[in-house]
Image: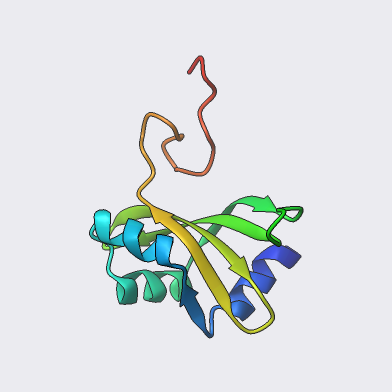
Length: 105
């Protein structure tokens, strides 16, 4: 398991929602408890941003009630900030929702 994935797993004990993440989850009818449970059960690291100006962050994929959900999060030692949450659009992502499609695809 990569260091980034390990760090995320360890940070999921305490999840703090940024206001933007709450608003976006509500727009897509994603329940907070459902998403938190899904993250603690399973996620796939899609993109890692170790040099983000606001601190290391990552884009992960999880599934809530069978729906794919992307979460941008920032993990700290024993807590995880959810920065934004959204349902990925099929026209922008591959079928597994793990790679962005190129413009010509």
